Length: 60
Image (cartoon, rainbow, N blue to C red; front, side, top):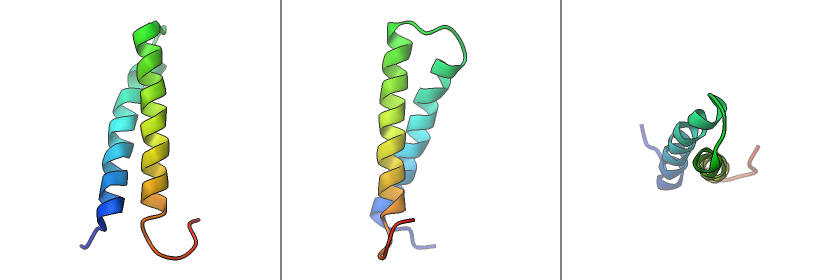
């Protein structure tokens, strides 16, 4: 199974983003929780972009 470097980095960012996102949706939000929500959503967005554009052609 040959995974391009960009797709691997994107997948890792998606996993880390999900892990950072989970504490924020589980209970009341303080400043630290809001910061992890922001970081998690940014990593999810970047990871999804990298993973989606890792192959040639038009990204779907």
